[in-house]
Amino acid sequence: MDVIRRDTPIEELVGSLPQSVGYLMRKGIQAIACGEPIWGTVEDAAKARGLTDTEIDEIVAALSGLLAARQSGSGIGSGAAS
Image (tube, rainbow, N blue to C red; front, side, top):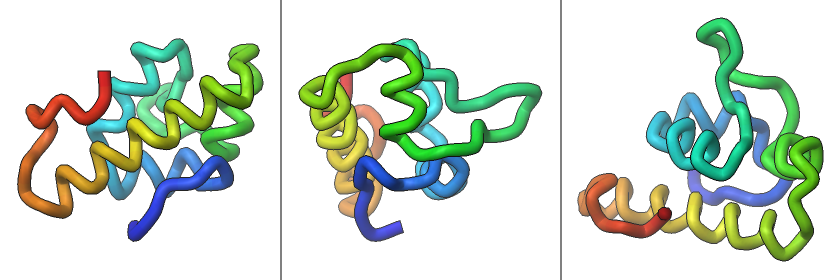
């Protein structure tokens, strides 16, 4: 995965960036059900939880930070998403 966008499928996100599950759960977004990723996009899942466009953009930015940290070797402890 090179980039995370609002239309990124949850299944792809979870497969490429497993630490995204914990971050999404802290934001109230279920990313896993019965051990399998939820279908739909990041935006779909966030809107289902009643999040605003601004909140969705913040989530996408934080997830992008997690991805960048992983790609640079900084790891999840970089604090990119909280």
